[in-house]
Image (cartoon, rainbow, N blue to C red; front, top):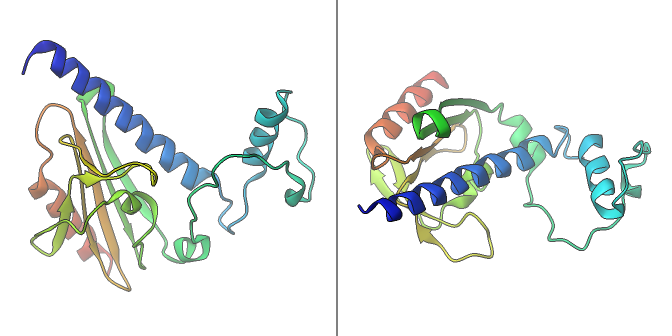
Length: 188
């Protein structure tokens, strides 16, 4: 691969990694576990609307100003809280040029978190399914990301999925499914 194309691809994947981190933070940190926005997030929203420094948040969260922006993705906080989610991450984009995230839960995570990025039903790999066809933004067209792989195994009582980003090699379905199988067995 020519040097310029490799640099462009690297920049694109680093941007994708940043989008993954941002989406995870928005979904994970924007709620207090009870489905209500946290005071810190409400205070941040107020500062961005008025342009002033954040002011103390009143006890009535519904008094937050209205913003003419698209609403955040709907997360079923009760479903997610009941699922007792476990997240394991490894790797670093700057150092390893690879990140690997394994998410497991005692419950159904379909339609939650990074599983909303899937643009198709994937293909079977053992007892799991995998895809590189994703839509990171609900308004964008789906596209195949050659450095990103999402694999999952879901049931009504258990969920395990992986998100693998590898800038130097094709993301490994074998490694992803092996991690899914280990986490699945641990969810007894």
